[in-house]
Each structure stands twice: as structure tokens, then as C-alpha cells.
Amino acid sequence: MDIRTVGVVGAGQMGNGIAHVFALAGFDVTMTDISQDALTASVEKIAQNLDRQVGRAKLTEAERDAAMARISTTPTLTDLGKLDLIIEAATEKEVVKHAIFAELLPHLGPQTILTSNTSSISITRLASQTDRPERFMGFHFMNPVPVMQLVELIRGIATDSATYDALEAVVAKLGKTSASAEDFPAFIVNRILMPMINEAIYTLYEGVGSVKSIDTSLKLGANHPMGPLELADFIGLDTCLAIMNVLHDGLADTKYRPCPLLTKYVEAGWLGRKTDRGFYDYRGEFPVPTR
Ligand code: CAA
Image (cartoon, rainbow, N blue to C red; front, side, top):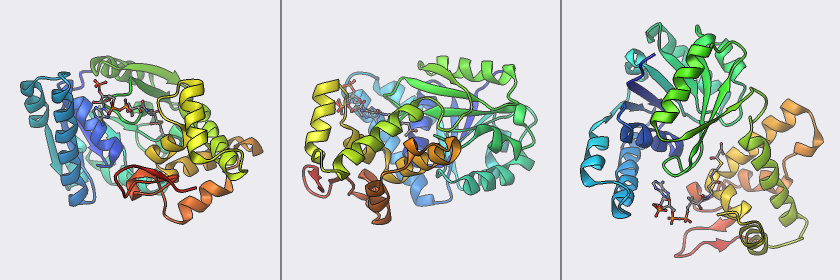
């Protein structure tokens, strides 16, 4: 399977990172989103992030310009039908993902591979609602996509080996490394990372440490590049809560219960960096802990 053209559904932080790395690797990328503003902002963000790489001598100006020229946008989801590979990176809500696939399916070519960047929803269940479970896979990028080396590849129960091999080759072409995960709740990275973040929130909730002492402890005591609360804000507290709920529901074990303080922050709309407030307040010059 020769994959050259890629459609990205959803122009949020994951969608723009995915479009960025595919365009840099020479694929033609078409992005779509229900919001024209999100599409416009996403292309601006990609340009900024490419500029940052030029500034750090990771890219030449010619490579940046060639990558930008490979990215186009459309407000019409069904325009993606003729492409070789679709990556759904819309909001982490199963009904939204089902609706996207339902609209797209009648327009897809028979060979098109359909993937989801879901961080935790069952690939087998998503695939079962499509006409191509054998050509459906989980294709999970990490944030920030241009920097993080890993891509998790998740086979649904029906995924065929040609599809797996094609995506493994795509990851190599991106210059990234793939890891194969079986289709169980939250796969590998989030199965391990989210309970750690949730435990950090319990540590805060129970008064064992402040935001600052918890983050400093893990940064300097375990050599993590970001503290767990800083990382939670970076990922999005709504996403962290959604993943904990998937683990809790899917594995039916109380060890995955989401911390009530995480729920409270999400209910407040304090979702982390994207809303300018979470465990830190980002509205000033420097992030300030909110507890
Ligand atoms: N685009 C392009 N380059 C970027 C970038 C972006 N969006 N963000 C950062 N960079 C680059 C910088 O240019 C810089 O490059 P050089 O090393 O070549 O100079 C490098 O990344 C480091 O950036 P900074 O110096 O600005 O900042 P930093 O050293 O503090 O690193 C970080 C930032 C890479 C984000 C680092 O803090 C980190 O690795 N944090 C942990 C991230 C993480 O764990 N991600 C996984 C989240 S879980 C997930 O994504 C799965 C899920 O489903 C929820």
C-alpha cells in the first residue's frame, strides 16, 4: 500500500501536530474541522512551530516552505474521501467519532485506511461501526507531536496485517518509532501515565504536597521533563478525566477511580493550558499554582 495523501479530521492541538509531521515527511495533507476559525488557527500554529524549528536550526527555510505548501484545508469532511489515509483527531467523544465516520464512509475509496488518534476509546468498537474493520486502526500520537518520538499502533480485533504493516511503514517515514499495543482500555502509554497523574492529584487533594512541591518532586526526583500536574494541564484536564473514566469503566477496578479534585477542576471549566487555568493559572507572565 503506497500512502501519499493524508486527511486529518480535527484541527485541535493533536490535529495540527499530526499535519505538521506528515507535511514535513513529504505527504500531502488535507485538514478539516467543523470550525473555520479552528482551521485557520491551526495552520498559523503549524507555521509558528515550523518557524521555531527553523530558529533552532532543525529545519531549513526551504523545508519549512515545502511543508507549508503540502498542507491544505477544507471545511467539507467528505472532500477527504479520495485520500489514502484518514486520521481522525477530533474531540475525545465516541458519539462525535461515530458521526464523523458515518458521514465519511460513503465517500471513501475501497483501499483507504481509516484511523483514529483516540487516546483511550476501543478501536474494535469504533471499527465495528464502519464498513472496513480490517482497514481500521488506532494511530496514537503523543503531544507535542513534532517533538515526541512515539506513535502507538493499536490493532482492533479485525485489523489485517497489510494495514498494520502500512502504518508501521508510515511511522518510519515520519522518522518516529512505533510501539504495538493491544486494544484494551487506554492502551499502553495512558494506562500507565494517567494513573500516575491521577495519583499526583490525590496527593494534592489529600494535602501531602502543594502543586509546586509535587511537580518539583517528580521533575527533580524522577527526572520527568514536566511535573505530573504541569503535564495534566498540558494534556487537558478534561482529557485526563475522560481517560480515567475509560480505565475505571473498562477495567472495573477501583484503583482507577478519578480523583474528585480532577472532576472539580473540569466542572469549573479549568481545563489546563487551553483555558488558561488548571493546576496553574497561565493568564500572567508566569504560571502560578492555583492551590
Ligand atoms: N513544535 C515543534 N517543536 C516543539 C514544540 C512544538 N509544538 N514544542 C516544543 N518543541 C521543541 C523545541 O523547539 C525544542 O527543540 P530543541 O530541543 O531542538 O531546541 C524542544 O522541543 C524542547 O522545547 P523547549 O525548550 O521549548 O521546552 P522544554 O525543554 O521544556 O520541552 C517538552 C518541552 C518537549 C514539551 C517537554 O517538557 C516534555 O517532553 N514534556 C513531556 C511531554 C509528554 O509527556 N507528552 C506526552 C503526553 S501524553 C500524550 O500525549 C498521550 C495522550 O493521549 C494524553
